[in-house]
Image (cartoon, rainbow, N blue to C red):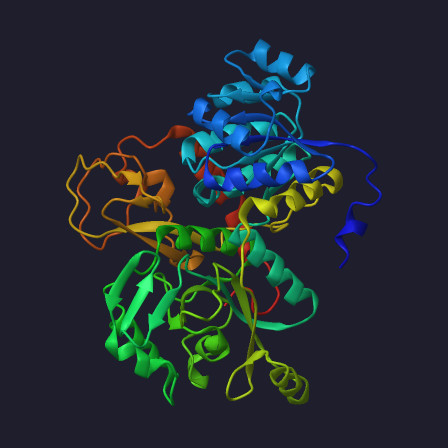
Amino acid sequence: MNLHHLFADTGSRTVRYALSGAGGGFARTLLAQTPRIPGLDPAVLCDRDVPRLHAMLLELGYSASDLDVCTTADEVAAAARAGHIALVQGGSLLSAAPWDILVEATGSPADGYAMAREALTDGRHVAMVSKEVDSVAGLHLADLAKDNGVVYTTADGDQPANLIGLVTWAELLGLDIVAIGKSSEYDLVLDPDRGTVTQLDTTVPAPELAALLSLGDDTRATLAARAQAVSALPVGATADYCEMAVVATNTGFRPDVERLHYPVARIAELADVYALREDGGLLHRAGAVDVFSALRLPDEASFAGGVFVVVRTGDQVTWETLRGKGHVVSRDGRYAAIYLPYHLMGVETPVSLLSAVLHHRPSGGTDPRAHAALAGRAQQDLPAGTVLAMGGHHHDVTDVQAVLLRDEDTPADVAPLYLAAHCTLARPVAAGELIRLADLADADEDLLAAWTLGRASRASRATDTTPAGRVG
């Protein structure tokens, strides 16, 4: 599809956005790309560290004379009248300037929800980058958007929106989808000469892995052996579970197992790995959402946090033709994998912003439902008074294992993981137990209300008829 046609009839209107968490990595990629795009301008940028934000903008080539550091609503309004970009520390100042869409990228469940709610109720669109917010309040925010005649959407460039796009493309073509998913953030790079495997900046011995580069006759046995070979490396970032929760909400594909499978797999193996168990693969049922760890050699291309769908092949002649062209088809010819081996973060997000504002079309799902819930299990006995601290690059919650529960396996009183984050336990929680709402002594009241309202509004619709393969 020629994307120029998508916006060819929208005239010369300029789309203006507000950006929260503007000093972060995702935000930087959007701000770096924006000056290259006619008809897209930042209006207000919010970050706790305004001096750092100001310095970053100068580094990106923004003119100092166009940047106004503002501490009051009047100053923000004056910056807008002058055609300048307002830089603010607090989210309460965002609404003082005219803009069309909020890009929420703080990663803070409470702060991000508050800013998104204010934008939607003020009749402005929201592109949600903070998957932590969406996993708790996404259903309610989607309801608020509908009530106020605006768009609430995931953002192109982030893996949830990219995967939703790939899934809907496959559905439009009538492909029979068995599984969807993404790779974990960092590849596993095998050096067979040294007998080591490297994940980002960590290298560990894995001498037996070189002999496991082929799946062999028993796919599941090989995958189990690979997992053992790299057991010294971490598996299963909380961010992966959170992103797949967003995807489940927007597509209806659900986890096959609550910890996800996380197979160590090569790209060419995905169609064999994500086959049904009766065909030698991992899946107990069709309609799965999952994450894999991409295994490659040093001189092979990275999957780079990309996304995939696995489909049943249908006409064998068609798919053997495609196999001959280098496409990934399972050894038995029953399954094929289609993938995009990239996500470009904010570089791609302008497509979502323009689409939401100019066409009122989201990049995410059009009918989100409570198909799955991101929750947490205690990794050890947690006494009353324990603070469930959230931190690190992946926003892990201390001593809590993220899990993704299918809707029918989700207790009514479960606490969503990012509602529990930063809370104090009101009572002990035993190792292996789910964190429940009653376990939280000081849950954020607004987030709790959003979770409750969103689930109540949408859960009943989850039993409606959906296309085959979506809910397995």
